[in-house]
Amino acid sequence: MPGELQTLIFAFAIGMVISGIFANVFELVTNTQSILHLQVTSDGRRLLIIAILMFAAPHIVMCAAGRVWRDGEMAPAHTFAICGLCSLWSIGLGFLIYKALFS
Image 1 (cartoon, rainbow, N blue to C red):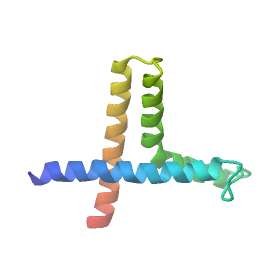
Image 2 (image 1 turned 45 degrees about the horizontal axis):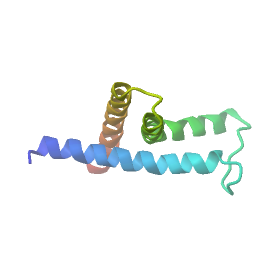
Image 3 (image 1 turned 180 degrees about the horizontal axis):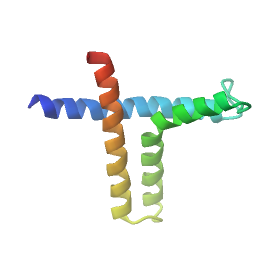
Image 4 (image 1 turned 90 degrees about the horizontal axis):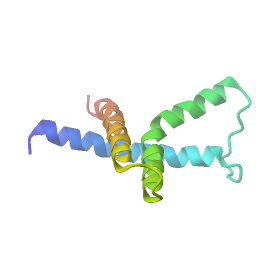
């Protein structure tokens, strides 16, 4: 397998894993029943939640698109377009992490 393709697949995998981890963290800090619940009382906390959401969004959006598609509320073409956009987002996130780790 060529090195560029291997890097692309690795970046996608890293992006999806990091996105899933941040999605779970986002759920923990926004769930009122959680011990780690973070009340938004200042601009700093709001920015922290937005930063977490920026990393968590590909996983959250892909899961939501799949759920809506299974329920028949969205056309398959729209679901594939959303998944393609989230895949690009994950690849970009993965390249950021890849470059931070291996450069």
